[in-house]
Image 1: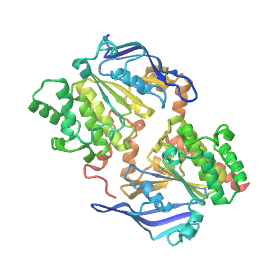
Image 2 (image 1 turned 135 degrees about the vertical axis):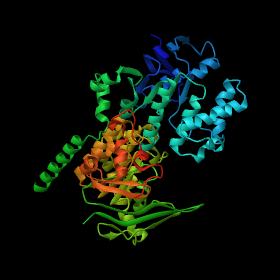
Image 3 (image 1 turned 180 degrees about the vertical axis):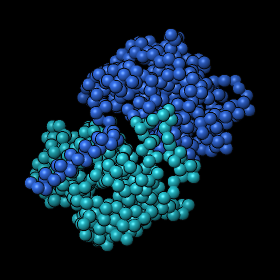
Length: 282
Length: 280
């Protein structure tokens, strides 16, 4: 079985320079993460701030090189500290960030945003670049006439569509999505999640989906990896983890996530009523 | 009689392209000891209406209302001096970004003691003692030491606890919490919501909780107002809202929750209204 992306015991250390009151020290942000994702599947990484989930994303997207462990893309071992990734490898892995307001250059027209990856990584003629960008705009639910507009003219959801379109311009095999819907309103979030599901099916994309929102993960993930303070505390299929969370931290996450279950609301309202009538009669 | 009573509140902003109506004829009332959730997406005007009550809107905003009373006193016709006795004392507010809400140049102790000295006329010594008590009440560990900490030395959750301590320092009768847990991790969110509900019950405060999160609404509110683009879409007690939502917009919001997904696709608001958007 071949995997699109595989991590074997990945670790990441950051050196924290000494300050006025202490010497330099090393912080291990990821303490040995192993995972493998098949083509067309979604691995969700769940964790809170400081869990190391974004650090891991930076390793997978070839932005930072790991301190230890092995990263394989399409079965090939990759170590960017030894050899700079070439255009083919860069094209294979693309990323979508959390904040669609920060991840698009405000001075660049949307068309240029989409054509830039082609300009840098391919030798396609200008007319072909433009045609592909316009086609991609349509594909993500925007229109070709948006080509000459600037990012500020779009809503948050539309901007996230542009960021997704940019990531898809080079026909990547793997898309790393770092909290792609957490800055969006609920109704827009649903649209973007639907779009991601459609695109995955159409292009056979593999997703590494980072989120803190368990309800989003339950909807989109095939496999789930739970991280806490740099450790992978639990991993398995979505159904396994949601049906039977084993690690105390995973259980704590589930317990803390607010739910809209009618029965739970009914019980809470009844408890509150009882408490109040008790206080009034007392 | 309701503690806070607002009828036909409209807030307009003067912009370079003309007047923009952020809140359009909204009625809000909250009873003593009640938890009211105002829920909506960005642009629904949910924060703006409460900022209007607090008098925190910029000069470009025009606020009109047929009625805006707190405990029978007309907030619209008060002098600045009279308002100061109500706002920040009887009605207090906490915000989304706890770290940004605190002044980075002063210790958290100084900031809460300032509230106590100015509003309650406590001496420095008494204010320090009361501040430590309040820090204990909101669950800040080692309150004697933390009182000397600066905001950047504390986590987001702890800063929100400091904000809550400041907000309950004057024993207010109404606390307005504007997205108090949105910037926080989910386990910290659960702790902060528990704390707010606990304090609300203990002090018999009314609580207005502004949020976009239906889960938070489900776990805290007695009554709910759903807003969209400055209009009230629905008002109901919490159980009726989730069990039998009347407004198409509420139904759309609830079905857009990934946890309620039944098929492969999530229904979106446009599935309920078509492309032209929501009408009242």
